[in-house]
Length: 286
Image 1: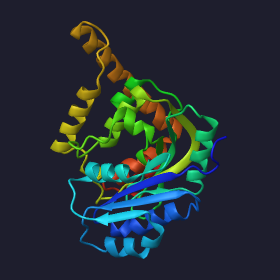
Image 2 (image 1 turned 45 degrees about the vertical axis):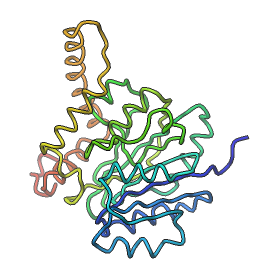
Image 3 (image 1 turned 30 degrees about the horizontal axis):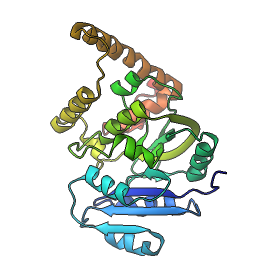
């Protein structure tokens, strides 16, 4: 008989995110899940983060504030501390939506062979306003994930045995460490989609995502793609043709997701992400 409330370990890496950290913490604690192990790994923040963490220390299983080697290192520290049957990773500017952990447990109980559960998620702005509801593919080929990370990192949960199968985050990556992790997970594990909105993904100027387009980001993208690209044929030329064709196909897949979710919401995110307000777009475009 499956345990009704298996232990869930949630890891939050944080560094100078005091503006959002309390909302993140409360989104987890207010799930009122009875068998929760909550771990915060702070990178030695110099803002009010430590004070916020101390306010909730009696409800945390473990926390530390010390200099680390970046986000991947911090998350891995938390993973190594985690003792739960199910593990989630929530950054300190994102949140879980109401009922998230219960939905995840129910999904694992319905799918005992599943290694990981992933759901839909919501893009929000700095103030928590919804910009776009992201409906994730219920099924997808490995190549789909290779050309674009469709999964929302805060809306992915996995059994702790996954770490034994695929290892931890690649600490050489400053960006896209979640994409690399999900690619390795997809190759080795059974991943099940649930049609629930589980989490929010906040877009704001102080987030690492705002650095996309920089040289280091491009390097991490290239490295991760080449690292995870599977040889399909004995001929390099055929491989090149195959992945070239899939690259084109992936652009149509992205267009499909925009149309499926809501083109206006996508425009809203695009404008916000590029420093514009959607209100400045001429009304005839909307």
